[in-house]
Length: 331
Image (tube, rainbow, N blue to C red):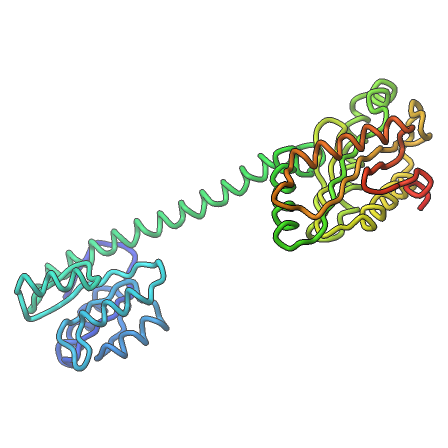
């Protein structure tokens, strides 16, 4: 009987055409606490492996039809990046046969008759390797989760929950690449809360933070499609990156945002443009080419934002189209 130290049991595939030897080995492995499945040929071994995914394969070299070397190569081809230990068993002790076994994808080579103590030691080594692999997979999953959390923290604004400036940069570059690849228009909107310093001075910084949160929720709600992204550009500045959005769509967004702000009606006593919190926006729309850059689009949108402010605020301006205040606010 094979006795091994207490470790997680293995699910072992025994491949041997000799029924008597196969049954004895399977019985010994089962008595040691392992789960065992048997196959008498290469074809059956491949089928069992595909369906049941054993932890270890004890593979006899001498098989009818396709031999163990052929079987091992086919098993390795099927793994697609995985790894199942293969231990060859053979009546031959020739060095060339051992070399062929390792070259075919085997991890060890045992000469029959295999002493019980030797096989027990090999199984124990495989159990240790399996446990190490499980730990590595677990650590890899934990690391992946931690990296995702770190990525989220590095690209999201803590106050509003929107993408931050770094997230905006990535979203804009991705949108440009998509527009260039698909030949579809895209729109960038840079927004600024009107007279926000005066709002903080009159209402206090706590209310100021609450105002920014509300603006963030509003802009996120305006992004109804998967390709629409709302970002906090910095301070009281926000941005919308809108994929597959032509000029007409940009006008619709401007009208929608202004209507939502008017409906929200956050009091802003120091706002010269209205009695509530308003925003001004610069809009630029294009079909990206190889010459289109994130920096160039941001600069053009920022220039359009400056024009919106210079024309009285509470409006959107675009160099590519006319977005009158009456349309943008009252739509």
